Image 1 (cartoon, rainbow, N blue to C red):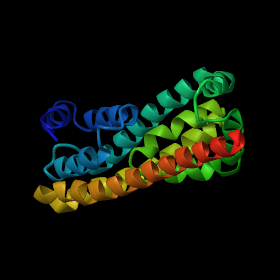
Image 2: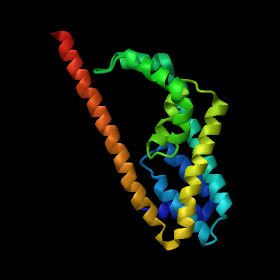
Image 3: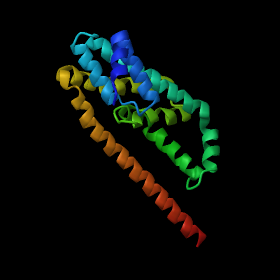
Image 4: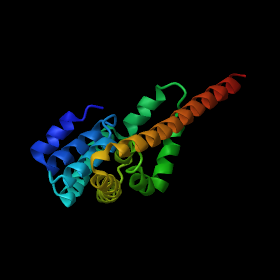
Length: 202
């Protein structure tokens, strides 16, 4: 991945630039924090920004990006989601109800630990908004989970120095595993739904 624009952003704006990069990463999951954060740590090791400032600004960026997606979910709303689902093949409105019940039971844990899972950390903000999770609780859990993730990757880049890109290589593998598991889960869901419909016709 071309990181020149990220480097320019951090060199121009310092720690706030790193925060802006992470806010964009939250809004556009294909932009990987596995690259941005270690690079911020490496930049801090060279004196391009303060280490603590890098952690604070990137955590603020994570919260801002997550908050934007939270409001997307909140504006979409439960009724609109249910209306969309009712027109979709292989999905039942009852599935939405079950998901809502699951999120109400495990929502806090999901938001906190979800901040440390590639791709998922961005998407989890949408159902949190749809379910109108308490905003102060959402912000607190998002900030806490993001602070842990950001600190770990920034420190890795800080101490690895010129080898900061090693972090992205290893976490890239983890991301593929997570995405692979998600694809398998969706595939299983679709196959099981089709089988259930076939049985229902019989």
